[in-house]
Length: 363
Image 1 (cartoon, rainbow, N blue to C red):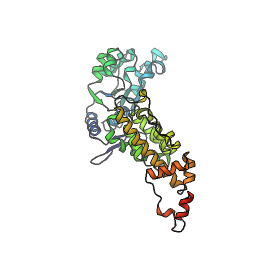
Image 2: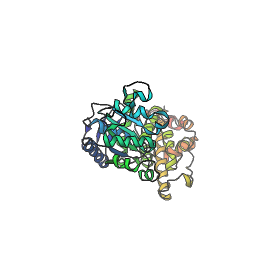
Image 3: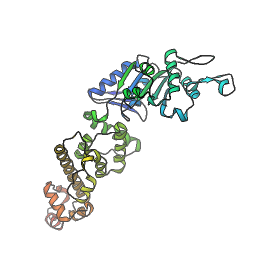
Image 4: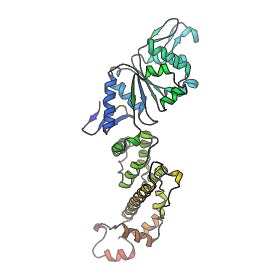
């Protein structure tokens, strides 16, 4: 069911979904999910978009007594235009298709399984009324009532109190759905497991794409730690995919700049001093002086790594490295001295070392 040690618990739910618990908070939620899986009743899962609500729902299904039956995800935002009421809940055939057999709908096809109502606050009012009846009586309305045994899980990324106040969710339906509630924290509140998640997504994606995993420099890890990840786990996974395939650290760093306030890709490539971010680009929760200090630290580490990597790629040919970095040769020499960079002894033989160094070449 999962891989466990004292620090990390990973449930491999499917080829694309896994539940990773590497912090005390997430291990507590994992234990809560295991407990609720045994209690066969509705569960309301709350959390921001991309925080892993579907993953939690599938985990509950997988470790429940219903795991041998279907798991059905319904996007409630699509019900009004894309999914007729009878297709979801069912009806007598004679009422809509001229026959006498029952059309049990998708709920009926999921008999004894689990249904996840994703973004339940977007469900049309007429669907909410029928869902309430189903939760109360375990039946579909009709001349001949049909018993359907499904477990209902509901999820939403919106403020539930606001949705109730705006009448987007029936209050009586809410009380039925929220018998048990699971709240998933956003990724910005899970920073202590961010490095584990980065490594997990990198290894899993690399295996899937048939590529060698890439490592994360200290600068990139620091930038990830101070980025707020508004898209949560979904954004983090996509970020890792791009970094794995493209392998361009300055570009990866530049993706994070709206929250941190730096422009690393351009600064590192051109060797220009960092310009302060505009006030509107700053995270209001960060103190301005603290942000400037953070930016200087991250920028310096990224610049050092970019120069070091370029020198290594060119065999410490400093003129070629300066050209690739789009900075002057003198500027590169200054940066080499500033960051105390030295070539490995393997790059030079005793006879050619001094002459190569004078010529700006490593060979």
